[in-house]
Length: 265
Ligand SMILES: C[S@@+](CC[C@H](N)C(=O)[O-])C[C@H]1O[C@@H](n2cnc3c(N)ncnc32)[C@H](O)[C@@H]1O
Image (cartoon, rainbow, N blue to C red; front, side, top):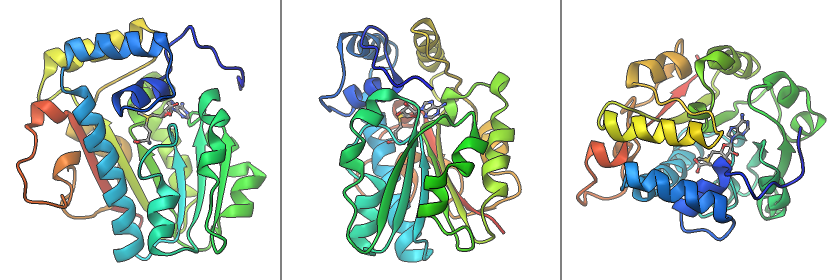
């Protein structure tokens, strides 16, 4: 697993940081981000909607579902609403294992490790495509109790795992390790509402060396949620998942991003 930072090549975490208005990105990431904005001009607003969904999902899990442990794979660079900040803001004893394969996220991981004294956070530099390694990492067992429910977070990461990489097997391996009553939170870019723009998004990512595959709602549900109990309102645009306000929300073609939560029976 590479640990050196290559600033000449765009990375998903840094392009996303650029969308969110962060500071941890380089020229190559900005160029890719700007090329992506030419094909989907609303991508930055969509990324913010996804990040807000992540925050609401964690709030739901802690406050309503009683979850106290999180395995967050594809964490991204530290930003607003880091999982432990939202979770421990509600219940300080919450525990979080963060996982990402980008060396720059590793370099910034200290900001993810600012746990409340009652809880615990840990970081693993690992790849979602090797779920066995994540589960077998001693840090995972030292942080999470696998006899109690755990929320697996795969937020805005499965679209970086194309079908050739067998994403369903990856999800199965992770879910099999979790006890009943655990949850999966996932979000995913979809081509359904703007096929041309999102097709351009996939091609731009791929041309930059980043594998990307948008999926329809059905494909996303089959990949992530088969065999699980969907939590209301099911698979919807991230902006429509239990929104905080009644304010006017963006059009589907401006969001292009589904999110959902499901429970392992
Ligand atoms: C778009 S960001 C999402 C960040 C955060 N989950 C969110 O939704 O706000 C995607 C993250 O997934 C990471 N990622 C992509 N492919 C991955 C893989 N195969 N294994 C681990 N992390 C991966 C990237 O490095 C990046 O940090």
